[in-house]
Image 1 (cartoon, rainbow, N blue to C red):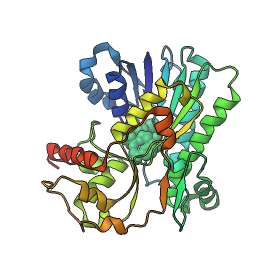
Image 2: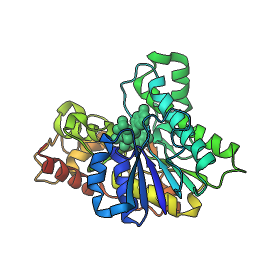
Image 3: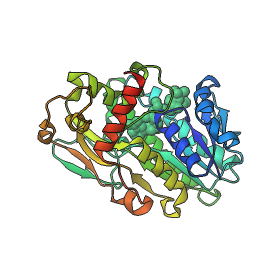
Length: 328
Ligand code: NDP
């Protein structure tokens, strides 16, 4: 079948495209400009006409995906801003929500052959900030961030602004699917990953222009002040495979699924790097003292998608090898 991937030039999306192609799918990658597609055209040239580009200049415009959805069997909607630089929350909320509702609306009207739409949400739409340790599951929703943005607007924290964009976009997807369930020939499956790390295959000129999550990892390995704290993680290649399985497994329809390998302290990554690594070593072993306030269950991903998660050692080795290859 043929799959439309929105935001196809992004960190996660390029891995999703590659994994789809490796698994026999054809891919139509949507990017904002022809220029943003050149790296993809080169990277996926070996797949010949199994990979094509479509230009969607502005995902917030009504009907933006009307042409792009025609003739595809499924959609992977990954396009959404992920950064912590917005002053006005609308900078994040508008493309996140309108982009999601817009692609679903285009599929409703013009996606006659679409069977499934996978939406890349986030653990940002699940998490809550708490002062006591908690383990969250797919039953949890991040209403906390939404309230903060409602109450504080521009002065809400940058984290809350991003998390609100993901929470409201995911909610909008579920609401849309429910509202039109009797007239649409497709269902929705949602992926909820925490911090995504691992090697990069999208176009990045220098570490400065890395996407948010890959940059956090690079900084942890190169700046002493960046290796405090921790979070939960997933290898980008495992997340890409989850996106493919979410199309293949009937039971993934109508489900939101947390995709995570577990929790980390940044120091754990420094410890997991190969002994030959020239990057920072930090304070070996100190990661065990990190208090993990937030963990996520991943049993649903194992049950429905058959996920087997990479180890920190594998992800660290491949990430370091990637930096070295680039001369970073
Ligand atoms: P990237 O920044 O690498 O990719 C984001 C993609 O979305 C790019 O293709 C980008 O296009 C597109 N995009 C961003 N803003 C807009 C906009 N206003 N209009 C149209 N397109 C836009 O990030 P990731 O690969 O990390 O993120 C992909 C998805 O994964 C997002 O939905 C993100 O929320 C989600 N996610 C990411 C996590 C992570 O740790 N990386 C964790 C959990 C979820 P362009 O290049 O043209 O700007």
